[in-house]
Image (cartoon, rainbow, N blue to C red):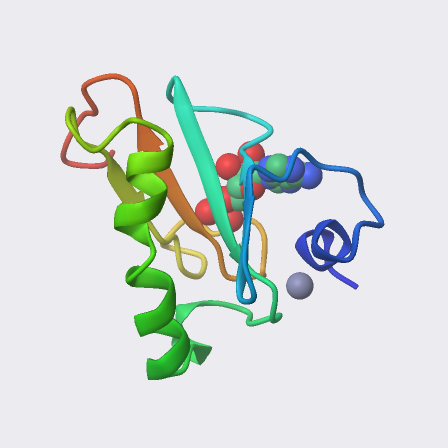
Length: 109
Ligand code: AMP
Ligand code: ZN
């Protein structure tokens, strides 16, 4: 089982900040911003290439609610999905980074 499947299953303890039928939200263990959350689908998918339109729509439709919950809708935020080697993906279980709480640099290095 991969590390995020273990977190979803409760085998690795984590601070689950939000949960619904499809996703959990946890703080990133190595935060790059004052707010750095990971939206993790409960279903193991290696990366975004494997997502169904239904799950994609479901997750993206929740981002507004999550942004409001963490009080970042006013100042803004960034969502990032690293994919594959060149995308810098290090955990092969699809996850969406949600970064906020400071002005973020662009373009990515
Ligand atoms: P990525 O490089 O896009 O695959 O992102 C993986 C992210 O998962 C990194 O930002 C890590 O800091 C984070 N991470 C790895 N293991 C854990 C964990 N056990 N709990 C929370 N975050 C983790
Ligand atoms: Zn997994």
